[in-house]
Image (cartoon, rainbow, N blue to C red; front, side, top):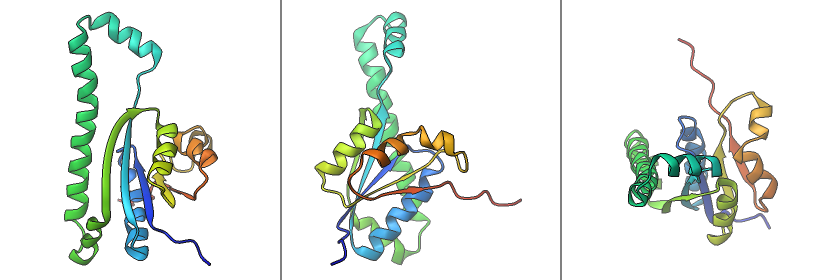
Length: 166
């Protein structure tokens, strides 16, 4: 029996290239009837960044507010991208929007969080994009590589589309 596609985890870094990956996740959901779960991980600050941040922003409430704003900004960007994406689709294709069951923005470590979230929602596939097309070394050092190596479900890595000629 062929595997059933019930839940797709689309992980986005909110880069320009992430639209191509979302198009693939949407296409798969349309063809299979699968739910789409969207995840964006705001990467935690490194230890060095935290020390610098604490050195220059003395007030703990201000530090908390600034860190909270990072997540809020990502949520706003996600909403804008979603609205634009769905408004540009044909009405028949836009109906797939009803298959989106969750949209989460969290502050954490990306690869670990993507793997954990895929398990939590019992995803059948992870869909994510790349940053650089054709630069395998850069790609292999990325979050995508870590997810690909650790996942026990299929991972679809969508490359950036070719640039259109002028």
